[in-house]
Image (cartoon, rainbow, N blue to C red; front, side, top):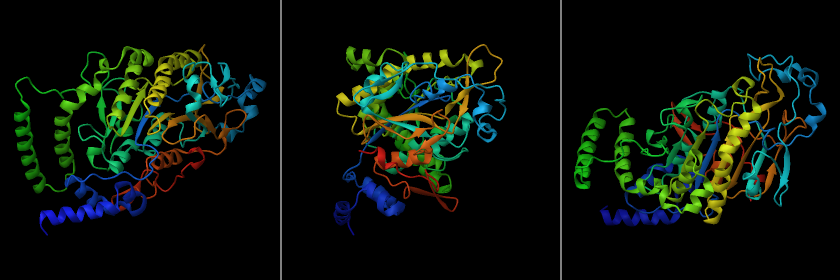
Length: 480
């Protein structure tokens, strides 16, 4: 078959199939064909009706208290001051923090006031005055559950679906399953408090695990007067032509080395990384230049590190980056509201004030640009906080780790708006109605992007693995 006949055959196949259909209906047996189609420069058409194209994941590190933010529990006032051991069983109090003793802990109502907002009448804490203004655009889940009250484990489960390192993150799975919309930019980008810092879960939260390394995150620095990606700029004497020749020579040498060492998949990822970096030299500077935005837009987000991150996230998805994650408070687990870490009141008031304006701006900005329908915003944390105080030698009030029921929210991407799903019991202790696990959350996110979580698999060590392991259900009640 000559080249012309091959192209004609590939075009005939393209009429019948598309990439999302491979994963939703045929499994990964079609990956090789998809790769071949890309190499032949034949565009792969999207699934007829994907709910979303991109994800912006806002992860609040440390365990945000659902009782102080989104889960209004007036019954706590009735029980306030009573000992937790008189309200809950010993079994219920076991397993939060193994090193903690709750024998003298007391029920604690929310330290902040709540009000209803929007046409939906959604309850929200006073510490979110800006987010309260966009409640009719968000979907609140009040019945999240996790498998662990330990920071590192909870963070890993929320990102990879597993309680130990070594598995691909959500962003890596989406990079693998959907590929890129912009070949000049990476599929998966992470922004955090500092380019050399990580939280308890470590790099495993955004690593590709056993997937090819090209699907791991690219780390972006958004600080003032800093290069977003270190060492991306070429030297003054390096012309584009010279760089292209250098890349071609390195690719040839790497390919020769790969032929001698076929069991080293990292080498292929390294070759692709060089190519992506070369293309990014042209595309990235414009995307990361926030001065191209109007003064009114910059003011909308606020001139703060988190505000700049959220604005950068919008510019990234606008330019075809598939998955963008912002880690807020990664340095020191800033949302960890123990009494000996600054206290619940000051902790949550300060952290909410630092993030509220930019989060609301992100929702508003995407909506005004017609991008909210195709962009899924996810606001999450590793777990909530206990409905009772800690027994701490501290003058400040604190709450312990709590994984039996907590809150998170999403917006856009085909979800019902101004909608609340699930409930904890009257004291905010257990997810009593419609509990949602991290497996369910992942299955739903994949579904919204046109992927079947049961069929998006990768064979590793003789077994087909998936993001949701052997669990997970799509939470269809929150989808519009």
